[in-house]
Image 1 (tube, helix red, strand yellow):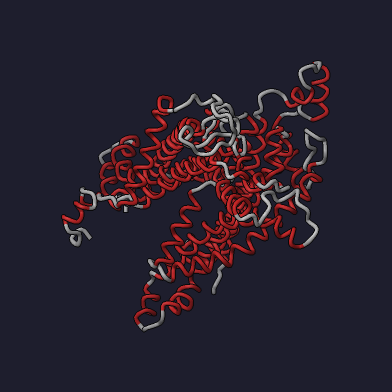
Image 2 (cartoon, rainbow over the protein chains, first blue to last red):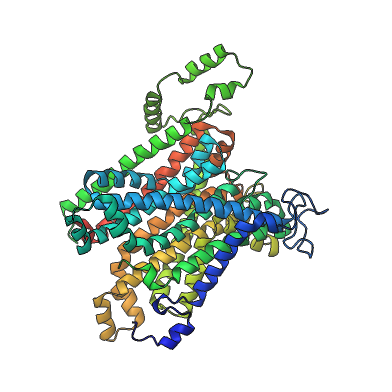
Length: 286
Length: 319
């Protein structure tokens, strides 16, 4: 595989030999970085204050003044989408980091210790997987009401079992390797085994899995907000923006189209990036 | 094929796991809705209620019992078909649910009947001509469909078919259902949306399952003896891919559960999911619990079905 690839071509294709990215992956990465920058800088780059009614018309068209038209109250859509990025990206990122960190740590512990702990935890979390994700969100929101911390924790709880299962399967493979046996024979304890022997060897696939899970979290979060049960007004993430302006659909208003396009651009780019990750990163444990 | 007692034991084990899962799930659903801040009796009676009235209502509703007893009581009620009464309009939940459940099941059945043949043929065709332009187009379309939220597929369908082309009404109910044509038009939009959502998953999984069998030595043998591409796939590979494909179908149909929640809300379709979303906004707990259980049971049965098919069709899983 490596022999067949000429150095010149790999340089042209993006430098680092086997770490070369193709163009689709780069486009994906660029779009993701764009949204991250927007999420961080949103309060300073919005053209109008988010809550202020600035257009005399509602569901206004795209114009020089309002790049994405105006919403159902005549507020500037561009400002609302930019600020919405903070909620969508921020909540999803927080949730997916909590889910993957706890899932991966528990998965590695289960793989290394095995036995009753592994069995009970696996069974319990499998049972958790038997609840459809959107439904779980609905039940929790019905019970405790919707707020941003509740959303983050709920989404994290929904996707933790999947992450656990994935990490455990990878860690079980690594756990049978000689260097782990050697480390164990040296008398190393579980925390060392997990952090120094197992984790570096499953990092690549785990990160790819984190990206995919991020997409699922964004989808469920937008779904909840779209049902009016996610981020509550006056704040609005992208899903809530679609819901607010749904009446404009029959008018073909840009206010419905742009937040939807924002969601799609983010989720599709993450998928594009992960599908085109260099094999050396994605399949490192194989 | 030889199915030993061991296989059936494994199937029974899967069913047992599903049953245990169901108990845990019902436990979770019941206690999640128990965590409500404030007492249901206080919420129902409002702020002006006297403590005596609240205590009376609590006793009448059985809320003074320990939670675990109410849970067991509720489970027994579910098992015998007694779903309790709705807090908000004091109607038997069974009455509220039954005709809506029929509506939702009808929607799911129509979607299944349309999706399965279409998605299977597309998936198998994509695997047969792997790497071709057709395969790449199908792959890109399915990935895009999977990575956008269901409500976006729904809004796009409305935008294209109702707003730009003007073929169909945007809402499924509220239009007259006098003639067959009108009924077809009323169902069209929710069905189209759900078909897209479910078939994207099904096409991808079917394609993956067929490709996995194509990569085996005996299909390569068929290639070497000069069988055509079509014959290799349909005659040699497909019979062995049937198990994984059936597994894929059952798994993809479980996406109906999430999809139907969004679709019924968008199109104002009077089904169980719409009822549940409304119940969440009015905090009608017994109703939420019953709806949630219906969804969990259907989801679990589909997943378990997929699991059992996988066990029956793949001897290597029977270890």
